[in-house]
Image (cartoon, rainbow, N blue to C red; front, side, top):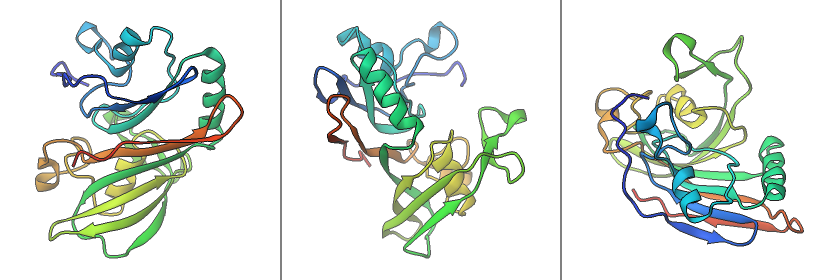
Length: 215
């Protein structure tokens, strides 16, 4: 993450909130939490806490990924949601535009991921040292040079969707880390967290929050 961090000035977009949960739509280009140094202090967390001082972090999205994030508004909710994420009980759905024409209509990528230490923060497929990573995918529509897909991660590894789509031979468009040439030329990373389903900390009923992809 370099010094050229210039986050968007989009107003805070609240999807829904109650006494325990706050769902927001994170814009692309904004860090979820503060980075290193004063120039990376502006982030979704600080913007949320300016309005909801009691808000607590539960999970993150990559800086360049947009979409649904949930914050806890009580310590009880933070613990409850933290366990759901840890035990893979939440359901996340993403939309992406990927480079090239994906031939099959659907599939599953089961490839282990590990940190690419010499090239941090990059990640890589690593069959010896990687941790299990599974992504289900489905084609929504095709254009001459790109395919719109819906992605269903079953695990939550760092950069998982970005690494898996590159491994499939169809990097996510606009990805500064994993796409090259024309595939990298898009105006932003074309990856959006479309929906998040979880259990409410009070009573366990199912809650789903959605945000339409801006691309």
